[in-house]
Image (tube, rainbow, N blue to C red):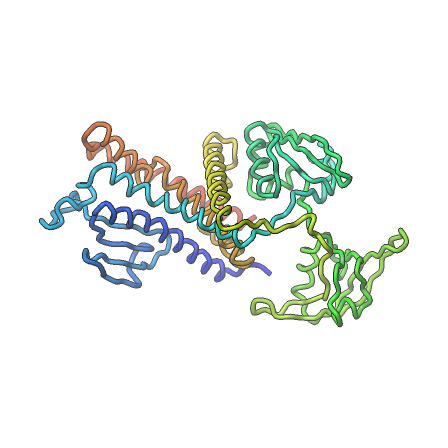
Length: 454
């Protein structure tokens, strides 16, 4: 069941509105602390849909029609004359260090939001998968390196990898830097051995979205479709399926793991299907096919098919990573720092050509991710918000004149030379910044459309 266009659009608008509000609030509140007069605080561009004027400065608070950004407008003497009582409160009349603080506050609040989001996730508990290997493709880099199904990845390039996220970050880091990935593996018997995936010049292709596992030739381990529990009176029990049986096909369509099984059963409520399973008895495996009339249940407002089974115990492969409120603060700060450094590295390597520019995402792809994460639950959506918030913070700190980072450069130059840049220099910088942003947006939209067209 795919994510609907409307669902993706709604999730995207909610996500962007939250992150823009956080970013602009950073500018707004620090400007207020610096005694700057705020004329308008707007979430979105264009015609205001909701508008309220409040406060001693009669600040206008707006929610506008185009939810792709926002802004805080400060009083500025360069835009016209100001009233005597407002003298000294214009943005350009405040000390340079205060202007820099206001500009930096937007990205800073995006990083702070990520820390708060990760803190909440760590307190609530993050479902975590141990980095274990599933299927290995014949003739692939993984097979040539000696990787086998069931192996666990203990470390990448000497860095411990307790979960898949840490594993992927470390793998991409070494892959891009060296064209190889050095692993420490542990087999089912607990024996450890090294393995090296040597890809050489193929490394850039492998950084394309969705290419890493397929290109290297292995998949992450997933829940096997083994019956761990039976629902009393359920469809499987009525058909004679037993605990320990492994489901291998539904109506002739192969089942490799529990996710495959759910994907085949869920769209068929109350439908009769042929279920093929294997059963081991006294060391001998037999296979059989039975006719099963699936049950049904309501899930998130939809009727889905139910086989009436639960998965086998997979606690050795999955666990809940959870910390106390105090410990979660440090964990959240470290997590935000690690994701920020990784994002910067990948961005820099895109500029050098070591990482595929296909990783640049536009609003269409972000909307799809927003919808998918919202569908999976609040914890996934919050994690998505944290990652996008970090990206937004980093993007705005780039030294492009139309962004916060470029304006900080202008203010820093004024601080160093004692006077502002000439108006001509600023205009040239603005024009160059607009061209750079248009190029970036063009790449992003091209990648979005290319993904849609396959």
